Length: 389
Ligand SMILES: *Cc1c(COP(=O)(O)O)cnc(C)c1O
Image (tube, rainbow, N blue to C red):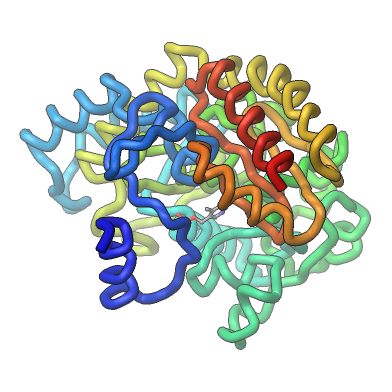
């Protein structure tokens, strides 16, 4: 029996079947390339779901992790953690917000932002967008504006109103005296890479100010250079009151958290996390952020992304493309129904790692360090796959 087949069978035997996985087992990565256990090489357009912004094996991140794990991996927040404080300083200095709380994932970041908004405002209704994705825990799932994820788990937090993404008037109408916060992804990710209409986020900011409601941005996917600025809120020149981050924050190690504006904070005992901001993950996160800044990767995402959007137009000569959209290196290509998954599976066989999301969209979120040549080769492969059919 083949090694891959054996591994897949073991997975089915021991691991709960929550994921629709692609039939490949990776052993190694270098830059924006991956290698499976049989040594086959792949170009990576997924980056571990917008996590590996520096690609694989970046020496700065590897070195920081090696050094830190030999010294101190975990200690808990019963003590002051130098590595955590150093990362916080660098993060805050490069964001428009003032203070940070560290958790371990995107969903946890959203949970923290829900609790903080409730505590600060004393209100408990949230406004969220249809088609949004905020994570799988109870609070985060409640905010997620896609019924398919929620319906087997209801009742959830019942005080969420969903509005059409991109329409500020609906937000205006939905706000009343019970609303604590409006929660939005600055660009919807999992929902198919939806870029908001020009001026939308700014208009929502104004409405929130006028009505005295907090604005929470879920930058879990858009953060750390993905959209052409370090944070998407900087790209759109709109500062939220609270921002959730995770995915690319830890250079591949799990970390999430929230940043908030001065004066919006928890007090002792109101929130906590055993692992949150531990020395190892913070050393990796700081090395990763320093590198993103030193290598000017947000700007690179912007420049390369612009070029790549043009390159992707070649797909239109092979496929019926419904739409192509994106900012920086966060791009969605919407195919005709049923086609996207087929493209993903067939591209994998030719050495390109893709991800399809929201029915028929291929979400392209490669490492920000990927070479143009590899992006071009990736487009070649997607075209070939279409021509073969
Ligand atoms: C991935 C994601 C989450 C959830 O993050 P987890 O780390 O999987 O809990 C939340 N919000 C957005 C926008 C995401 O892309």
